[in-house]
Amino acid sequence: MARSLLKAALAFIIVFAVFETGFYFGNFFNEKAEGIRETPLAVSSNSQMETLPDKALTATANIVAVTSDGQGAMSLANVEINPNGKGRVLIDANPFVETDTQQSLETAAKVASVFTGKSLADKDVIYSVSGTNAQLIGGPSAGVAFTVATIAAIKGKQVRTDAAITGTINIGGSIGKIGGIVEKMNALVEQNGKLFLIPSGQR
Image (cartoon, rainbow, N blue to C red; front, side, top):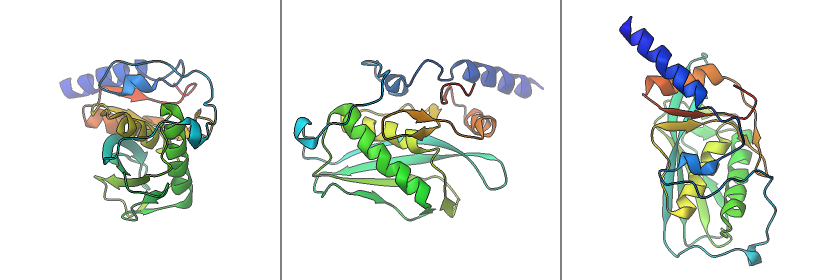
């Protein structure tokens, strides 16, 4: 019974930590936030952007999902930025990734580039998922998690390991709504998570 009460209390805390006032990327990193983006991102040309250092950059972020049998599950979104690239977005095919997920990953790279003001034109961004038994990954709801991880890699930061975020990512930088909030939150609670960010309006 004590365990049930503890889980209920943690779930209550997480619900109060949900994202209601706009997407605040800084809260998700281990360092102090540098600012809030409250408006859609402007599209910038590569000529206006700064170049990244000539070295490999990596970051990870937690993904929360709902399995085919309706259970919440957690895995890791992995981002690698290869310095010797051609502006490609490459996706590891193990597990297989459906078309809508592939499209959300391409958007994640574009939004991260614009958000940070760093060009990825001469880099390759490599996305993969680890820590899962799934044979197939579908849906766009991990888009914002991959976006955050990409921003972290570009900025040389790390994403909090006790946090998770869910939501689609749109090309203008806005966050779209998703399903399975309760199942995803339960998966985070089971892993002793402390911060759960969801799209505005889905509390």
